Structures are given as C-alpha cells and as structure tokens.
Image (cartoon, rainbow, N blue to C red; front, side):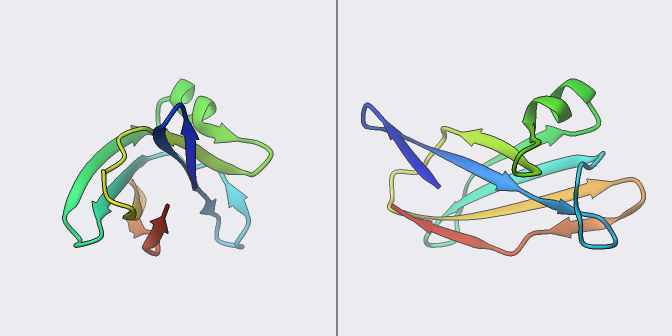
Length: 103
C-alpha cells in the first residue's frame, strides 16, 4: 500500500510465507523484492537476508504474520509492479504472484 508523509511517497510491502499446510510462517533464506514500472522495466531490487536472526525478527510482524518491509524507493509513475522471490538451500526459488499497485 502507498503511504504519504509530507508529499514523500513510500510503500509498506507485506510478504507472507506459507508452510506445507498453508499456514503463515517465518522463513530462513533470502527474500528479494523487485519493483518495476508500468512498462515492466525493473526499477529497484533489494535483497533481505532472512537467515540473519536480527533482520528476520525486525521484519516479521507477529500480528499479520507477514514480513513487513518499508520501501521508500518509489518510482515517479503512478503504477508499479511488485514481485517477491524467496530462496533457501532446501527448495527451488518461490516467486510471488505479481502485484500491481496504483496511487
């Protein structure tokens, strides 16, 4: 979702990981968030190391059971495409559904 403070726009991205039974859980691995403009050109990408206990704890929101990621590198256009990819040693990369957000 977009949030605005003093005309600066930012995102709060929620990423939910599910276990084999479909329950929300924490993950140990690498989480890559990618933002593209509405033409599909990748604008920004960032890696979050969820194997780092401090980072994992800081990003995980126990109420929503999601990783809550603040994002302030917002493209100037009004529509962005967000994808999340989770990778660990034990499985193939898991890619989210693409989410399109408009202001």
